[in-house]
View (cartoon, rainbow, N blue to C red):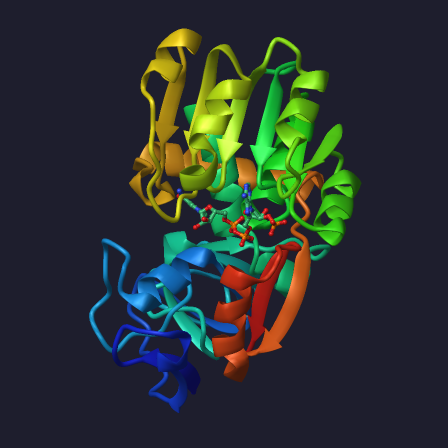
Length: 319
Ligand code: NAP
Protein backbone atom coordinates (compact mmCIF):
# COMPACT_ATOMS: atom_id res chain seq x y z
CA UNK A 1 0.00 0.00 0.00
CA UNK A 2 1.01 3.64 -0.36
CA UNK A 3 1.75 5.72 2.73
CA UNK A 4 3.48 8.93 3.67
CA UNK A 5 6.66 8.01 5.56
CA UNK A 6 8.81 10.27 7.74
CA UNK A 7 12.39 8.96 8.19
CA UNK A 8 13.77 12.01 10.04
CA UNK A 9 12.12 14.94 11.84
CA UNK A 10 12.27 18.24 9.98
CA UNK A 11 10.61 20.48 7.41
CA UNK A 12 7.43 19.34 5.56
CA UNK A 13 9.58 17.89 2.72
CA UNK A 14 10.70 15.03 5.03
CA UNK A 15 7.29 13.47 4.25
CA UNK A 16 7.68 11.10 1.28
CA UNK A 17 5.12 8.89 -0.43
CA UNK A 18 6.39 5.29 -0.28
CA UNK A 19 5.21 1.76 -0.95
CA UNK A 20 5.02 -0.06 2.43
CA UNK A 21 3.69 -3.46 3.54
CA UNK A 22 -0.04 -3.59 4.39
CA UNK A 23 -0.32 -4.16 8.17
CA UNK A 24 -1.33 -7.61 9.50
CA UNK A 25 -4.53 -7.61 11.60
CA UNK A 26 -4.34 -8.85 15.21
CA UNK A 27 -7.26 -10.47 17.05
CA UNK A 28 -8.68 -7.23 18.52
CA UNK A 29 -7.69 -5.03 15.58
CA UNK A 30 -9.37 -3.50 12.55
CA UNK A 31 -7.80 -2.61 9.20
CA UNK A 32 -9.44 0.46 7.64
CA UNK A 33 -9.18 1.52 3.99
CA UNK A 34 -8.66 5.25 4.43
CA UNK A 35 -10.84 7.41 2.20
CA UNK A 36 -9.76 10.70 3.79
CA UNK A 37 -7.18 11.67 6.44
CA UNK A 38 -7.50 14.81 8.57
CA UNK A 39 -4.57 17.22 8.77
CA UNK A 40 -4.19 18.74 12.24
CA UNK A 41 -1.63 21.32 13.41
CA UNK A 42 -0.28 18.69 15.86
CA UNK A 43 0.80 16.56 12.87
CA UNK A 44 3.15 19.38 11.86
CA UNK A 45 4.59 19.78 15.38
CA UNK A 46 5.28 16.01 15.56
CA UNK A 47 6.82 15.93 12.06
CA UNK A 48 9.10 18.86 12.85
CA UNK A 49 10.40 17.16 16.01
CA UNK A 50 9.31 19.90 18.46
CA UNK A 51 6.43 17.93 20.00
CA UNK A 52 7.20 16.55 23.48
CA UNK A 53 5.99 13.03 22.60
CA UNK A 54 7.82 11.76 19.53
CA UNK A 55 7.05 8.59 17.56
CA UNK A 56 9.84 6.15 16.72
CA UNK A 57 11.25 6.71 13.23
CA UNK A 58 10.26 5.93 10.55
CA UNK A 59 6.57 6.64 11.05
CA UNK A 60 3.44 7.56 9.09
CA UNK A 61 1.75 10.79 10.29
CA UNK A 62 -1.94 11.39 10.90
CA UNK A 63 -4.29 10.84 13.83
CA UNK A 64 -7.64 11.51 12.17
CA UNK A 65 -9.22 9.64 9.29
CA UNK A 66 -12.33 8.02 7.90
CA UNK A 67 -12.89 5.08 5.59
CA UNK A 68 -14.27 1.59 5.18
CA UNK A 69 -13.47 -1.49 7.27
CA UNK A 70 -11.29 -3.78 5.16
CA UNK A 71 -10.53 -6.59 7.64
CA UNK A 72 -11.31 -7.41 11.28
CA UNK A 73 -9.57 -9.64 13.82
CA UNK A 74 -11.49 -12.68 15.15
CA UNK A 75 -12.35 -11.00 18.49
CA UNK A 76 -13.77 -7.78 16.97
CA UNK A 77 -17.52 -7.30 17.47
CA UNK A 78 -18.02 -3.52 17.12
CA UNK A 79 -17.65 -3.30 13.32
CA UNK A 80 -17.67 -5.62 10.30
CA UNK A 81 -16.05 -5.58 6.86
CA UNK A 82 -17.62 -2.85 4.70
CA UNK A 83 -18.75 -0.58 7.58
CA UNK A 84 -18.14 3.17 7.21
CA UNK A 85 -16.06 4.42 10.14
CA UNK A 86 -14.16 7.39 11.50
CA UNK A 87 -11.05 6.95 13.63
CA UNK A 88 -9.97 8.30 16.99
CA UNK A 89 -6.32 7.54 16.31
CA UNK A 90 -4.68 4.44 14.84
CA UNK A 91 -1.64 2.24 15.40
CA UNK A 92 0.02 2.95 12.05
CA UNK A 93 -0.95 6.53 11.01
CA UNK A 94 -3.75 7.77 8.76
CA UNK A 95 -1.75 9.43 5.92
CA UNK A 96 -1.93 6.10 4.07
CA UNK A 97 -4.18 3.88 2.00
CA UNK A 98 -4.81 1.66 5.05
CA UNK A 99 -4.56 2.19 8.78
CA UNK A 100 -4.46 -0.47 11.47
CA UNK A 101 -6.56 0.37 14.53
CA UNK A 102 -7.52 -1.12 17.86
CA UNK A 103 -11.25 -1.85 17.97
CA UNK A 104 -11.86 1.10 20.35
CA UNK A 105 -10.34 3.51 17.79
CA UNK A 106 -13.06 2.89 15.17
CA UNK A 107 -16.53 4.45 15.31
CA UNK A 108 -19.52 4.19 12.99
CA UNK A 109 -19.78 7.07 10.53
CA UNK A 110 -23.39 7.99 9.72
CA UNK A 111 -24.34 7.88 6.01
CA UNK A 112 -25.06 11.63 5.95
CA UNK A 113 -21.44 12.46 6.89
CA UNK A 114 -18.97 12.18 3.98
CA UNK A 115 -15.58 10.54 4.42
CA UNK A 116 -13.92 13.95 4.03
CA UNK A 117 -16.04 15.29 6.88
CA UNK A 118 -15.35 12.11 8.86
CA UNK A 119 -11.63 12.87 8.66
CA UNK A 120 -12.32 16.13 10.50
CA UNK A 121 -14.15 14.70 13.48
CA UNK A 122 -11.97 13.33 16.23
CA UNK A 123 -9.30 15.84 17.22
CA UNK A 124 -11.34 19.00 16.52
CA UNK A 125 -14.62 17.85 18.10
CA UNK A 126 -13.02 16.05 21.03
CA UNK A 127 -10.83 19.07 21.81
CA UNK A 128 -13.69 21.53 21.60
CA UNK A 129 -15.93 19.34 23.79
CA UNK A 130 -13.22 18.87 26.41
CA UNK A 131 -12.46 22.59 26.49
CA UNK A 132 -16.07 23.75 26.75
CA UNK A 133 -17.60 21.15 29.02
CA UNK A 134 -14.88 19.21 30.86
CA UNK A 135 -12.59 22.22 31.49
CA UNK A 136 -14.68 25.44 31.41
CA UNK A 137 -17.87 23.64 32.56
CA UNK A 138 -19.96 25.85 30.26
CA UNK A 139 -23.66 26.10 31.11
CA UNK A 140 -26.64 27.08 28.96
CA UNK A 141 -27.05 30.87 28.72
CA UNK A 142 -23.35 31.65 29.29
CA UNK A 143 -21.26 33.58 26.76
CA UNK A 144 -18.12 32.07 25.23
CA UNK A 145 -15.49 33.81 23.13
CA UNK A 146 -13.94 31.36 20.67
CA UNK A 147 -10.69 33.18 20.02
CA UNK A 148 -9.87 31.56 16.67
CA UNK A 149 -13.23 30.21 15.50
CA UNK A 150 -12.54 29.66 11.78
CA UNK A 151 -10.39 26.51 12.09
CA UNK A 152 -11.15 22.88 12.90
CA UNK A 153 -11.46 23.27 16.69
CA UNK A 154 -13.21 26.64 16.47
CA UNK A 155 -15.99 25.44 14.18
CA UNK A 156 -16.49 22.35 16.32
CA UNK A 157 -16.76 24.61 19.40
CA UNK A 158 -19.42 26.75 17.69
CA UNK A 159 -21.51 23.66 16.92
CA UNK A 160 -21.19 22.23 20.46
CA UNK A 161 -21.85 25.67 21.94
CA UNK A 162 -25.01 26.29 19.90
CA UNK A 163 -26.42 22.94 20.94
CA UNK A 164 -25.68 23.71 24.62
CA UNK A 165 -27.46 27.08 24.48
CA UNK A 166 -24.35 29.26 24.77
CA UNK A 167 -24.08 32.76 23.35
CA UNK A 168 -21.16 32.62 20.95
CA UNK A 169 -18.64 35.28 20.07
CA UNK A 170 -16.17 34.06 17.44
CA UNK A 171 -13.09 35.55 15.82
CA UNK A 172 -11.39 34.98 12.46
CA UNK A 173 -8.64 36.73 10.53
CA UNK A 174 -10.05 36.76 7.00
CA UNK A 175 -13.31 37.74 5.30
CA UNK A 176 -13.86 34.12 4.22
CA UNK A 177 -13.22 32.90 7.78
CA UNK A 178 -15.57 35.48 9.31
CA UNK A 179 -18.32 34.51 6.87
CA UNK A 180 -17.90 30.84 7.80
CA UNK A 181 -18.02 31.60 11.53
CA UNK A 182 -21.23 33.60 11.03
CA UNK A 183 -22.79 30.86 8.88
CA UNK A 184 -22.01 28.33 11.59
CA UNK A 185 -24.21 30.33 13.94
CA UNK A 186 -21.91 32.56 16.00
CA UNK A 187 -23.98 35.38 17.50
CA UNK A 188 -21.20 37.94 16.96
CA UNK A 189 -18.12 37.73 14.74
CA UNK A 190 -14.92 39.76 15.17
CA UNK A 191 -11.70 40.10 13.20
CA UNK A 192 -8.65 39.27 15.36
CA UNK A 193 -6.39 41.04 12.86
CA UNK A 194 -8.15 44.38 13.51
CA UNK A 195 -6.67 46.75 16.06
CA UNK A 196 -9.85 47.60 18.01
CA UNK A 197 -11.59 44.22 18.00
CA UNK A 198 -11.27 43.73 21.77
CA UNK A 199 -13.17 46.98 22.28
CA UNK A 200 -15.85 45.67 19.92
CA UNK A 201 -16.08 42.49 22.02
CA UNK A 202 -16.58 44.52 25.19
CA UNK A 203 -19.40 46.42 23.49
CA UNK A 204 -21.44 43.20 23.27
CA UNK A 205 -20.24 41.73 26.61
CA UNK A 206 -19.92 44.76 28.83
CA UNK A 207 -19.37 42.82 32.07
CA UNK A 208 -16.68 40.89 30.22
CA UNK A 209 -16.71 37.40 28.72
CA UNK A 210 -17.13 34.53 31.21
CA UNK A 211 -15.47 31.82 29.05
CA UNK A 212 -12.68 32.13 26.49
CA UNK A 213 -11.39 29.26 24.34
CA UNK A 214 -7.93 30.40 23.28
CA UNK A 215 -6.29 29.09 20.07
CA UNK A 216 -3.18 31.31 20.15
CA UNK A 217 -2.32 32.01 23.77
CA UNK A 218 1.18 33.37 23.18
CA UNK A 219 -0.45 36.28 21.30
CA UNK A 220 -3.68 36.66 23.26
CA UNK A 221 -3.47 35.51 26.88
CA UNK A 222 -2.84 38.96 28.39
CA UNK A 223 -5.51 40.51 26.13
CA UNK A 224 -7.95 37.78 27.19
CA UNK A 225 -7.58 38.85 30.81
CA UNK A 226 -8.58 42.40 29.81
CA UNK A 227 -11.90 41.23 28.38
CA UNK A 228 -12.59 38.36 30.82
CA UNK A 229 -15.53 38.69 33.24
CA UNK A 230 -14.84 38.42 36.98
CA UNK A 231 -14.52 34.73 37.93
CA UNK A 232 -14.08 33.95 34.23
CA UNK A 233 -12.42 30.86 32.79
CA UNK A 234 -9.87 30.72 29.98
CA UNK A 235 -8.97 27.42 28.33
CA UNK A 236 -5.59 27.46 26.59
CA UNK A 237 -6.01 25.15 23.60
CA UNK A 238 -3.28 26.44 21.29
CA UNK A 239 -0.02 28.37 21.79
CA UNK A 240 2.98 28.74 19.50
CA UNK A 241 5.51 30.60 21.61
CA UNK A 242 5.90 32.50 24.89
CA UNK A 243 4.78 35.90 26.12
CA UNK A 244 5.41 38.40 28.87
CA UNK A 245 2.71 37.80 31.45
CA UNK A 246 1.53 39.82 34.46
CA UNK A 247 -0.04 37.42 37.00
CA UNK A 248 -1.77 40.34 38.75
CA UNK A 249 -4.30 40.37 35.91
CA UNK A 250 -5.53 36.93 37.06
CA UNK A 251 -5.98 38.25 40.62
CA UNK A 252 -8.09 41.25 39.60
CA UNK A 253 -10.50 38.97 37.77
CA UNK A 254 -10.35 35.92 40.07
CA UNK A 255 -9.56 34.20 36.79
CA UNK A 256 -9.10 30.49 36.21
CA UNK A 257 -6.77 29.50 33.39
CA UNK A 258 -6.93 25.88 32.28
CA UNK A 259 -4.26 24.34 30.10
CA UNK A 260 -5.32 21.27 28.18
CA UNK A 261 -3.99 18.55 25.93
CA UNK A 262 -6.61 16.21 24.56
CA UNK A 263 -4.16 13.36 24.94
CA UNK A 264 -4.24 13.78 28.76
CA UNK A 265 -7.97 13.01 28.95
CA UNK A 266 -8.69 10.06 31.25
CA UNK A 267 -10.34 6.94 29.85
CA UNK A 268 -13.63 7.96 31.49
CA UNK A 269 -13.48 11.50 30.09
CA UNK A 270 -12.56 10.17 26.62
CA UNK A 271 -15.45 7.74 26.68
CA UNK A 272 -17.83 10.60 27.52
CA UNK A 273 -16.33 12.64 24.65
CA UNK A 274 -16.72 9.81 22.14
CA UNK A 275 -20.27 9.05 23.28
CA UNK A 276 -21.23 12.70 22.89
CA UNK A 277 -19.60 12.91 19.43
CA UNK A 278 -21.46 9.80 18.25
CA UNK A 279 -24.70 11.29 19.63
CA UNK A 280 -24.05 14.67 17.97
CA UNK A 281 -23.34 13.04 14.62
CA UNK A 282 -26.44 10.89 14.70
CA UNK A 283 -28.71 13.70 15.98
CA UNK A 284 -27.31 15.92 13.24
CA UNK A 285 -25.99 18.94 15.18
CA UNK A 286 -22.32 18.12 14.49
CA UNK A 287 -21.31 18.77 10.89
CA UNK A 288 -17.58 19.01 10.13
CA UNK A 289 -16.67 21.65 7.55
CA UNK A 290 -14.04 20.71 4.96
CA UNK A 291 -12.05 23.61 3.55
CA UNK A 292 -9.46 22.03 1.23
CA UNK A 293 -8.82 18.47 0.05
CA UNK A 294 -5.39 17.47 -1.29
CA UNK A 295 -4.32 14.17 -2.83
CA UNK A 296 -2.19 12.14 -0.39
CA UNK A 297 0.97 12.82 -2.39
CA UNK A 298 0.53 16.56 -1.62
CA UNK A 299 0.88 16.11 2.15
CA UNK A 300 3.82 18.54 2.08
CA UNK A 301 1.64 21.34 0.72
CA UNK A 302 -1.11 20.47 3.20
CA UNK A 303 1.36 20.92 6.09
CA UNK A 304 2.40 24.33 4.79
CA UNK A 305 -1.21 25.40 4.45
CA UNK A 306 -2.41 24.26 7.87
CA UNK A 307 0.20 26.49 9.52
CA UNK A 308 0.54 29.42 7.11
CA UNK A 309 -2.83 29.97 5.44
CA UNK A 310 -5.86 31.65 6.95
CA UNK A 311 -8.09 28.91 8.31
CA UNK A 312 -11.31 27.82 6.63
CA UNK A 313 -12.55 24.55 8.14
CA UNK A 314 -10.50 21.35 7.81
CA UNK A 315 -7.71 20.37 5.48
CA UNK A 316 -7.91 16.70 4.43
CA UNK A 317 -5.78 14.30 2.37
CA UNK A 318 -7.29 11.83 -0.09
CA UNK A 319 -5.32 8.59 -0.60
P1 NAP B 1 -6.60 25.54 12.46
O1 NAP B 1 -7.71 24.82 11.79
O2 NAP B 1 -5.32 25.75 11.74
O3 NAP B 1 -7.15 26.96 12.96
C1 NAP B 1 -6.33 27.89 13.60
C2 NAP B 1 -7.23 28.96 14.21
O4 NAP B 1 -6.43 29.92 14.92
C3 NAP B 1 -7.96 29.74 13.12
O5 NAP B 1 -9.27 30.02 13.55
C4 NAP B 1 -7.14 31.00 13.03
O6 NAP B 1 -7.85 32.12 12.47
C5 NAP B 1 -6.85 31.21 14.49
N1 NAP B 1 -5.89 32.30 14.71
C6 NAP B 1 -4.87 32.73 13.93
N2 NAP B 1 -4.33 33.87 14.44
C7 NAP B 1 -5.04 34.15 15.57
C8 NAP B 1 -5.00 35.20 16.52
N3 NAP B 1 -4.10 36.19 16.47
N4 NAP B 1 -5.90 35.16 17.53
C9 NAP B 1 -6.82 34.19 17.65
N5 NAP B 1 -6.91 33.18 16.77
C10 NAP B 1 -6.04 33.15 15.74
O7 NAP B 1 -6.21 24.79 13.81
P2 NAP B 1 -7.17 24.00 14.83
O8 NAP B 1 -7.14 22.56 14.47
O9 NAP B 1 -8.45 24.72 14.93
O10 NAP B 1 -6.33 24.16 16.18
C11 NAP B 1 -6.22 25.44 16.79
C12 NAP B 1 -5.03 25.44 17.76
O11 NAP B 1 -5.30 24.51 18.82
C13 NAP B 1 -3.72 24.98 17.12
O12 NAP B 1 -2.65 25.71 17.68
C14 NAP B 1 -3.62 23.52 17.53
O13 NAP B 1 -2.30 23.06 17.58
C15 NAP B 1 -4.27 23.56 18.90
N6 NAP B 1 -4.88 22.30 19.32
C16 NAP B 1 -4.64 21.91 20.59
C17 NAP B 1 -5.23 20.78 21.09
C18 NAP B 1 -5.04 20.43 22.53
O14 NAP B 1 -5.31 19.29 22.91
N7 NAP B 1 -4.61 21.37 23.34
C19 NAP B 1 -6.01 19.96 20.25
C20 NAP B 1 -6.25 20.40 18.94
C21 NAP B 1 -5.67 21.59 18.49
P3 NAP B 1 -7.50 32.76 11.02
O15 NAP B 1 -6.74 31.75 10.22
O16 NAP B 1 -8.88 33.06 10.46
O17 NAP B 1 -6.71 33.99 11.31
